[in-house]
Image (tube, rainbow, N blue to C red; front, side):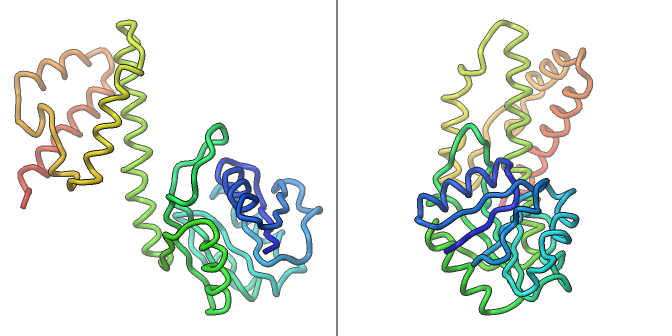
Length: 241
């Protein structure tokens, strides 16, 4: 297929590499240079930040009202395209992306939504060249999926950053945490997250928690995060089936 990607960010970079590796013809366009945008393609993929999405779509679809356009945003509705093009949808690869590290799309789940069956068939054909993990999901469901991903990825990564700050204060590298990080991730492949939980909060070890709260006295924001997370770990443990 001929695929046009609008955007040069982390997802766009990874998607372009995956599509080229799968044998597709890919034209990559920076969202600031839309005058170079082709008039026709099998799929136009708008992969820009959420705040710019509506504006880019409005410009990109002009003169291409019969083309298939999709965006890649987890939390944005499909209907951003409504009234601007006849065929549209969402192609959402749920993964964390970096330009410095290309990911294997074969391991990624791709969630698709379209406004018509012909577009759905084309998107599924495209997705099948990248991954066997393809799901239909509407905009409301995708909003919840994205929220879950924020907890599972973004907030977890922020906790890594906080851990690195604690270690840095004592001259220790974050690499000492990697075996722990890796085993924690491996466990939830086999256990429900609640069943995999360990640590002082789930044990209700008040002595340790009070000591650690006191250690964070000079960083009240981090202290609050520690207390909030500990309280919520206990809430889930109390509600454990």
